[in-house]
Length: 489
Image (cartoon, rainbow, N blue to C red):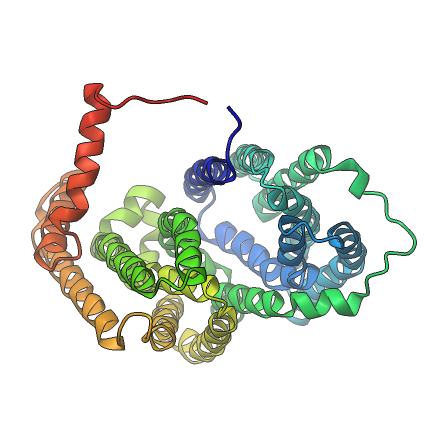
């Protein structure tokens, strides 16, 4: 039986989500091992080199890849020409991004070792610029399997190389080389899987760079904003406090932001649902889905926020060792970015799915400016803790802007605020339980105890209801009792 478009999309999304989850897990485990082997100074030097290239990598794409994906998905006649034009543009933009990265290092008077690490990271950056575009052509054709396999294998190669480099004492240059190996693998794999006839560059494309740039501009602005507010903290920490401070901050950063894969997997299903309701002008359905997603994302976000913050004094030594004890203050603060981040995923899905992506871009630009200003003020004074507070204030600011933009869809901004207040109360109660009761328990028992308190609080404040749980329970019961018939196509 032929697979329908909806089934194909669902299967591809599930495959990509599984690969992404596996990729994140491998990356987290490898980072933990590398950090324990190298210590804060090498970790900080490597994380700083990656941060430099991660900021300037936006110059190598400038929003072109989403334009190509959209053109291919829409069966646009100019899609092949746009792809070839994007390849040509990248041949110019990638060297510019590399020169900008190296130029930043020179301007900051970095050591030869750091400059070498940045240079090797530039190899990874250049490779990423091309393989992401090649994978984009496959995404546009709803063929996500090659990307899922390629990214997971690439992450495994990087993880293996990084652990080896750390064990052999190759420092930040060796770690950067491991990153480059994974990126180069993805170029090789993507080239093999992308449509070969698209790769030769014809002389006259009939599409101008101006046309491509016009379409890519919103994506470029959004991409630059995300990269700046994601990595400006590390750049400022290195400038004002040095590489070791970056190393202390890096472990808190990695442990906290690794949790983003949870709302990412949820919004993979949420975005099309909101888009469909908007297209059909089903306003009641749109409101119901949006408010339900906000409530459930808050229910998932608050216990992770409270748990990571409250258990920071025990989690940091457990994962990274006693030499990273200086990371604990930042780790106690930074997880409070997660609750607004989780809820903002629903807001972003709604704005993007209802043809209001420009509002989301506006919010991201405002957040970038806020984050940069706060880091410039707080990092010189408080180091990693200042960077953590800058992140917390910035993401709460992003959430509040999004709440204003989506207030009408929610039936009034108070409806969103009410969900937020309940989540904050539940988070505070869970945090207190972890801090004042969980400290007397072994770490695993404390995690279980606090998790149980969080579940009870989620039901108490009605972020989760019996109506949410019963259908899931019935489905699982039927599946494991043999009552559900599974049809294979």
